[in-house]
Image 1 (cartoon, each protein chain N blue to C red):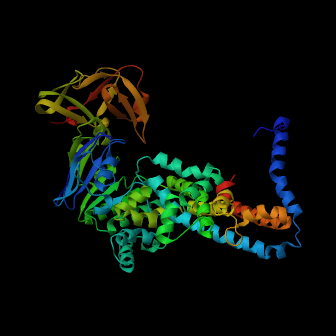
Image 2 (tube, each protein chain N blue to C red):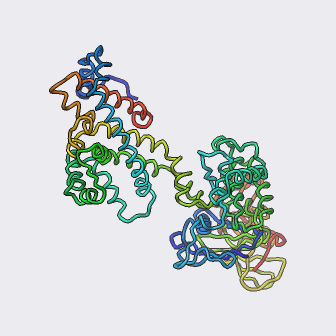
Image 3 (cartoon, rainbow over the protein chains, first blue to last red):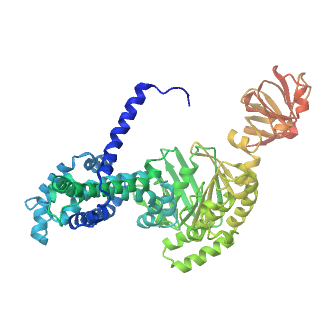
Length: 260
Length: 340
């Protein structure tokens, strides 16, 4: 590498950029009253939001894995017509404002919606403004992260190993289970972690589709937003927990995302 | 009981008729890009034919547009060029995989896999991952995996190409033994003439997807019919018209041969049979040649002459020659082999 003074025109904005990204987080940690932290964490409303968030994000992740891994396989391996279009559709929730996703879910799965109406009349199930609704909203927003990650791993995996399995008499399902899935496991794990982190932080779609009912649909991000006016310290505690989760996710994926 | 195939795939320009009897090893020999791997993939069921057919025991495997039996329903075993062992499984699980896929219970599959690993001489490596094996060991695992399901047809794609020279000699001898013992039909594709001669009962030479010569390895080695094969087996090959013991080559030169022939004919002779001189000798079969290239081999110098003829000389002889001027080439009539 070429030695010499780094040009000021680049260094100054770079340092400002770094400060802009890091200072708010430092500020958050500085304002935290650490002596109260354990008792706050265990208090009724914080604990409730925390528990609900973990349960909903985990359930949403399960839904995403069960539906998303086969979807990724279809995109990477299936000879389906219009595959590029399908891939584009899968990616839409990734860039769509979550609140728009929430509105869309409400229109389709709400009581008057085409699918919601059927659920109501056939099974007596109503999703909006319930805990199940939280899971649906989170899964909607988080699934593309899993699909993209797993599809990338599938495309990078050598499809000839699957051909070798076929010549040994393995059906496509057996090949998927015993050959393909184990070889893309790191991608599946990374996608799952990313998906779970996204579900945990979900706000817009959740509040639109599932509303804000403490103990039922008030997940951590919603609780942070509400507590900010009434009980800032509770908001800070929840924020620190979410920050810790983010850092943990980043650390677990460091080889994939923060390499070099 | 014969494997009877006509393999036509337009994309690769492939048009290959192929029959293989039980116990027979047919080697498809050809340069890179000749369509060898395409032919093997079609036989394995990994690539549908565009035209032609693949039949075995009166059962149709592929006959477009009506029938296509996919790979997993064909009784084939494939040894891939880079083996394609399953890296996340042990060696034993690799070999047992085909048996498990075809419904053999786990313990029975493992026991049979172990027998096959012992047969190829690497039973002691059974617990290892493929990544921990040497090239020769990985090749043996690939062979055991392909044979374990007792296929009707065994397909091998350049089975020795990934090995270093030392390992190759030993593995080739072992492979020849296993192929002799294998009761099914074997198709092996390679670009290596030594592998082809050592392993094949019959050679099918393909160039640009078309068959250019077939026959027993000895026959092909002695009587090459294309420049590619002649080059592989180390002979100069010329074509001409014979009239008695005189052959008029396509280039206009006339040669005298020992045996009398008539009509269109091949003339073959080893590069070592040519001598080069500055002055014209009185010998028959002398012509003026231009040097187009020089290559140093182990202990001989190969001189490339115009019209695709090569001469192998000792370095000492070459030192006495002025290679920039045309030279008189001479070859003795006894060295010339003629065949139709």
